[in-house]
Length: 148
Image 1: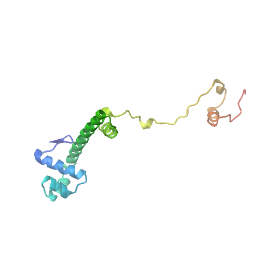
Image 2: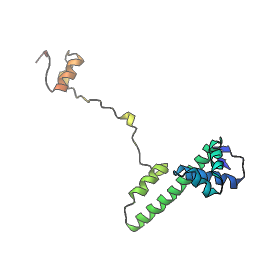
Image 3: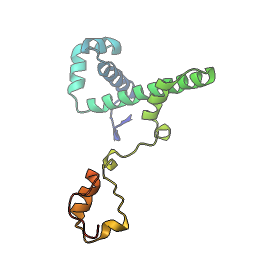
Image 4: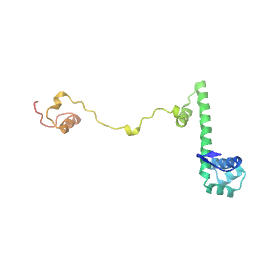
């Protein structure tokens, strides 16, 4: 079995038990529940969880769970679309799991509040930029203006 890009060296039926136990544990099941489900002792589950391969079993359990969720969401969305119902939840799930269905997201780091000033030709007469900014920010003139 391959999990996490590394080869897990054990018979596939044993690996499936590990993944099943990991699946139950990831859903909040106890070691006792996981042990009963896979036909092993609770002590065995504790040993598996202490093993360096346990994170790989958890990752594969997560991948299998996501695959099931994705399949259910696709089926629900299809039935909603064909039945004229609202499939918002199914679509939201698919948008998060399937990059091709994801709406375009704006990069929040690009959200800058930069004031936009429009200066006329009359503003470019020997005035420091600070005065021009103050003038436009405050909606009026703040200093002596030459030539007025």
